[in-house]
Each structure stands twice: as structure tokens, then as C-alpha cells.
Amino acid sequence: MISVSGLNDDIYTAMLTNAQEKIVSEVLTAARMGRTSITSASKGLTPTFLAQLREEGVDHIIEADGRFKLFWEF
Image (cartoon, rainbow, N blue to C red; front, side):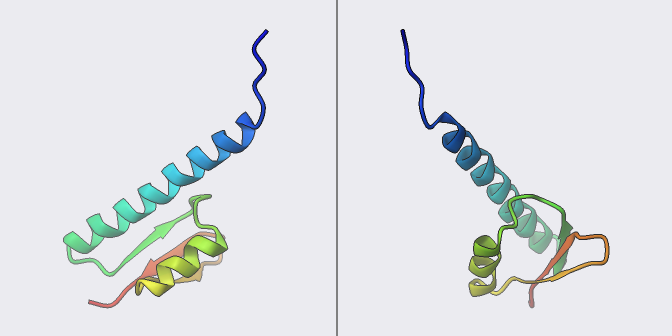
């Protein structure tokens, strides 16, 4: 019999990493097009990740509908 333990944590980590990579990709794509903001409702926008983005010059506000507006200066 095969025993699998801790898989739930691995799945969560993989999905969170994927969501955060998509956010970074969206920011870079928007910047390439000359935009200075994006709006996202991704679950990857955790407080820790938002703090890391802020350290890199990407700040945020929470909009009325609960989505996050990420913005940066050129």
C-alpha cells in the first residue's frame, strides 16, 4: 500500500506559486505595453506577496469590489 501524506500542502503551494507567477507576468506584460497598473482578484495576492511587490516598487489599493489595483511608476 502506498501512503501519501502532506499532499494537500504541496498542492496549495503549487497553486499559490502558479497564481503569483501569473500576477508577475501580468505586471510585466502591462509595463511592456506602457501601462502603469493592473487590476486583479487573484488568490495569489497574499499579504506577504503584496509586501514583496511593494519592495519592488509595485504598490496596491483594494477597490470597492474587493479586487486589488496594482500600480507602479515609470
